[in-house]
Image (cartoon, rainbow, N blue to C red; front, side, top):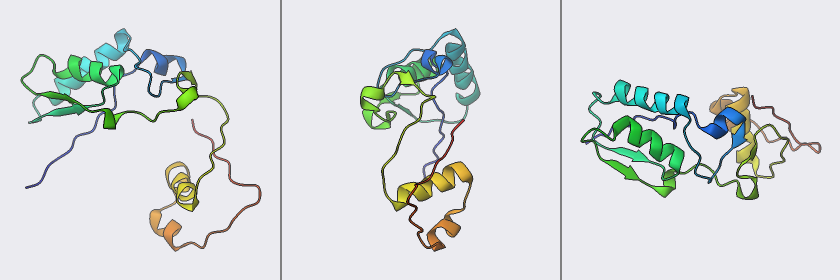
Length: 139
């Protein structure tokens, strides 16, 4: 038996509009975000979806409830689908400079996601440690 997964990101939140990294804070949908959620429901409700699994954080739960709350499709809340917990950085501006200390796999994933380097190239490449590290810009 196969299962088809459809993925949607929660609708626009108030913090998205303000450039704030919400993290594990609940967040809320403004009028535009509620409209986005309703549009998701209209777009997806006839796709044969058997169940909606959503993060339990308010902005994701609210998206699911607006999109599918008036249908017979069950909505299941799961904390494991939450956004990253940014700790003390929850609720802070997203346009800041941060330092990541990780591993070779972390650096290669950044190369893949940000610079589009293929996984085949990255796994075949020798690791070249750099004394001055690497810098990436998002957005």
